[in-house]
Image 1 (cartoon, rainbow, N blue to C red):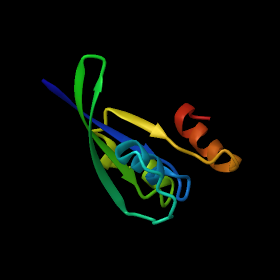
Image 2: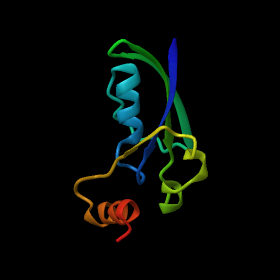
Image 3: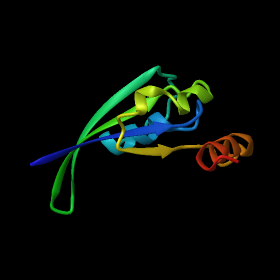
Image 4: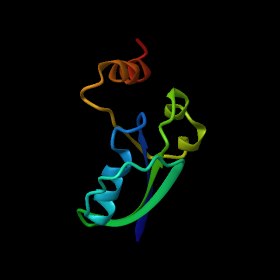
Length: 100
């Protein structure tokens, strides 16, 4: 029996959300920047003895609102992606997660 899970990728524009998702699903590096609105990728995998159908929701990341967007309410997991050379946006994530 397959388990269904939805994973939301959250982050600001240009941090590599689409590249990471594309690499995970297709095992290829996607190095061209193509701002998207929202993309859902599907992937099947095995973890241990369990089979999973994954839906990976790649958001546009156009502003802080997308971090809290209602489309992600049904997600089972969230992956926060940020650029390590952008302290200001990291701080926004930190305040979002921990409330300070």
